[in-house]
Image (tube, rainbow, N blue to C red; front, side, top):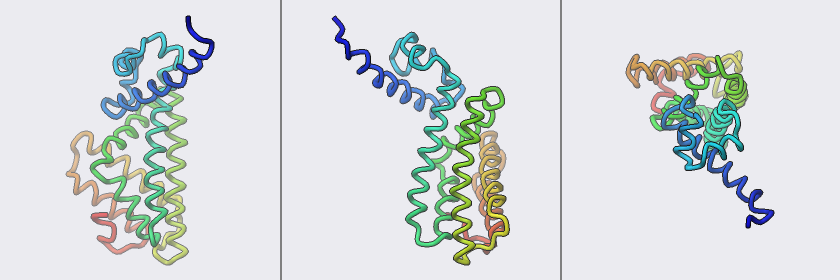
Length: 205
């Protein structure tokens, strides 16, 4: 006989399993691969249990994207916060988003921008996460302006240009346009110009 508390105990376990399976699928196959059938296969939960806990795969894709994007933001923010100067913090931010091991995360962003055209849940998540990343970049640029490390007349615009370059060069990489070095140089030199740094200051992180 099932005890009265067993369902309540199983609930968080099922949700944790669902969340972990969704992250695994997103990182290996993209957000579009988060389907009920694939979730059942990866999580070993029945479709009925998954549907009861997460009735909308669109909402699950959005939450998974947010979890991954904000988790990465937290890691980068923590390292940047320990930087001795705003210039070092900017180097950390730029190198983190250009790093080879960031490729999967960048692909998730490419998925989100594309899927968001037809999935309102993902569209909202992408906008909210982008705003949070934008706030981090602006805070670094503002600190650099105050310290004299940078000379930026419009920090929010410079930050938006940076993330636009990250997204566009990610798309280039997905279709093999330009070499990795050329894509990185496009980002670093553009950022250097926008914040008043000498050429090569950000190259190589």
